[in-house]
Image (cartoon, rainbow, N blue to C red):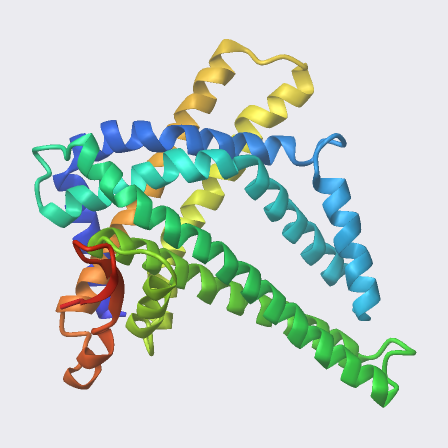
Length: 324
């Protein structure tokens, strides 16, 4: 807990030290993604969106898997459907503006030049490994969801063979709650690994599945610390999304039109969302530095981080490059 608080204080200090750059250039780059996230939250409940189709497909899949028709799994199905729909709608902004914004933040922190903004060419040099790692992160998230649902399917199939699925019982309720908690834990760990992999890709300039592997090694035995560091920013982002729904989406549904003052308030909320995305990236980078160079890494673990990334020599053949 004490080490986590130090990392948060160090991240806040780094953000305030680079305040002008982070709140201007980086926030401007992240703003389109933030606006798309907030607007997608407003467009998801509409009948013409992808949500009803995705929800019905998942409901059919859950029924075929033998999941109980409880309110808990209905809520879980709805949340997963909303996440999938929002991810599809914001994918173009994620692959462009979000990754470029993260690259600009990592480049500024990596070279310790907050007063001299990194060049656009240096930012683009980090975009390719971040993009490669992001695609691998998507497969990791899909694998985590599939693993969680697979474990729940196995558990409920075992209960059905025991004959407890024919009538409601406390065991079914207990297994439903346990399955929802297991799903949340697996997904949270996968997200933490993905965030660390993106920070590692930007800091070391290499992306792909090896960055995810190295992130897993870095977080070995320190997952609780990573979850604690990610909790404040994610709570703040959820609060900002709720604020957007209350201050922008709700007045629009009531009045039927968007007033100028409400539109300006929506722009300010999207800008605030961008600031917290920047903070999340800064925390990930500071956490990576603490894990790589700080006292959190023991002597016996240092050899695990000597992972080789593929590289091409001057003749075009694939070789290996050992990281420090």
